[in-house]
Amino acid sequence: EAQVTQNPRYLITVTGKKLTVTCSQNMNHEYMSWYRQDPGLGLRQIYYSMNVEVTDKGDVPEGYKVSRKEKRNFPLILESPSPNQTSLYFCASSLGLVSEQFFGPGTRLTVL
Amino acid sequence: QKEVEQDPGPLSVPEGAIVSLNCTYSNSAFQYFMWYRQYSRKGPELLMYTYSSGNKEDGRFTAQVDKSSKYISLFIRDSQPSDSATYLCAMSADNFNKFYFGSGTKLNVKP
Image 1 (tube, each protein chain N blue to C red):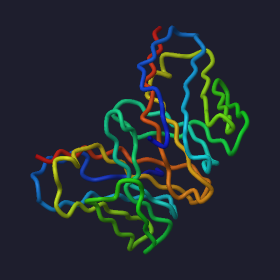
Image 2: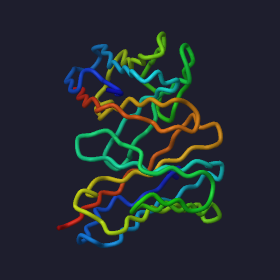
Image 3: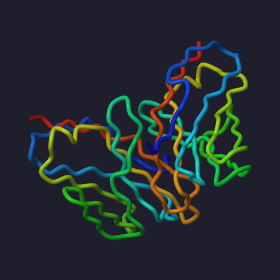
């Protein structure tokens, strides 16, 4: 089944404890992206990647890191999480330019 | 000013009604316009996609883009309870790398 998977789905952590949210797609998509969704603010793009080893900042990249060492994986790294990073995170992938984005199921992160 | 503005609702309509959802935007560089539907506790899924101005129809759904007014709309005809969800508009400029989403409109279709 074609899909985007994210792990973990739920995470509660404390300020400053490094964490990684994994994202994997099995559709051989070139483009991958991370978003956060907050009430009243909608989806905001954090980082995106057009291909392996090619990443760029979205609208709200501060406090996040990404890497794209393999085509299928695009992990999101929070080196020192803070409470304002408490949010619902979505990973998405698509074939490339002018193409439908497929979203993962979401990761609900709480930083205490 | 936010790049994309969308009325959050909620919007409550009876089954069978015509629903109109709208977004306005400020960046005249936007060329690609999308509507996503998001059910509770799920990721968004693409409903409609249009390029530049004009209309596009797909079954009960019609997307309209008016670039001169920086205004896009999604119409749902003969709305069904299964249409109850949050609808998000999204836009991108020519390079199609960065996406900008509206905050979403929550729709409830009552049986």
